Image 1 (cartoon, rainbow, N blue to C red):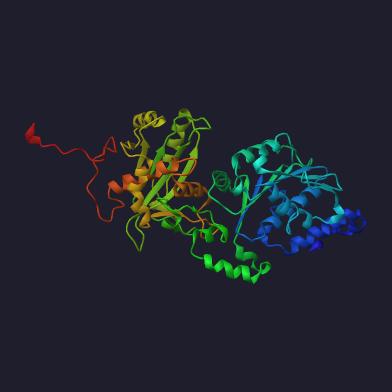
Image 2 (image 1 turned 180 degrees about the vertical axis):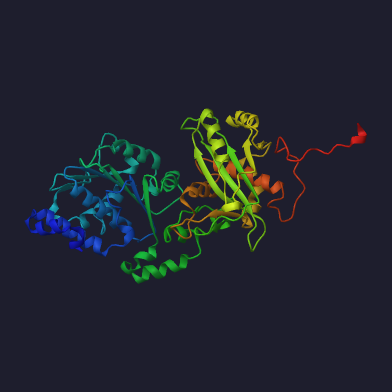
Length: 474
């Protein structure tokens, strides 16, 4: 394996290297040669900022991060690396002194000092690795770093605050190479936290994600542990802690992940009979307020079931009205489907509040098929409950990932986690956008198995059909 890590010229010079450099490379080569593919981060030459390993218990997350971090610190002399874990005990007994921690991975010859109190490791090349507990995130203030490892990020009590403080200090370029940039390693058992969902949504941009289940590292686990896992099969805890899936563990939610069907990632979208784009507009574009959310839904007829609806696009952004209008026009021009069966949205549905009021007027002036939605007296929970039967009967589909079978596409994960966590999610914009669209399709009988009489709560300000008039009564 060592020969594979070295080019011919470097291999010829290997014997003349400094002793510590030879020791470091041999240790790294031994690790890479036996590691699972998901345990090795992308090369630093690749353009990314965050490497996320979402995996079940025992999948080897800690070892993966510890091996990556010390190697980065060694190959970039004089740099500062930070380890952030949920508590000080997690730092000491897992990240530093644990059986898969840093001190178990770094060759002892390379460590010149280890300060247990400050969680500080000094390497012989001048690099430092310092630990800070997430519950004392203010200690991250003022620490400038090149590399960071966040262990069990989803378990941080102050997850966003700790992340923000860490990012503020991640500003030292590791070396003078053109591709050089600060990096973050995130290892965590996934939970539907907003920050985790944000990172998942950034996959393919500045985030690289690897996924693994407990079973993929089964050869390194005790047989008794594997047998114990069997008793949890079929539970939500099993899906999260063993299979590494982002799920909602809370009972009593209106919508759950098992209600959705997945449209195969390799399969073209079906022929859509009707397409609606639904907008929930924010009151302002300020970052601390809710964003504007858009969901696009295509109605289709599955081969083995009644009329259903597929989420074909969604996004949530903080947009001022001058930027929102051209964004809506751009989205309306997009055609969905394949070949001759591709079509534009048939309707733009906008909630009649905040920026939505002005948006509705502007779209009418532009002669676009816009329709105003007014929830009347129904609150957010009631609106979701009204459409719950559509979700519960498996009528709502989500697009499956092209690369990770059984998972939704990364851009849809934020929507899925938010609606399954409602009403406990930090935001509910996707929920509002989805419920008003599905409520409309339900009332138009696109999704009804047994059509019901229309409600009298004045949900809509205007209707698709003109009112009937008796000409003889005039």
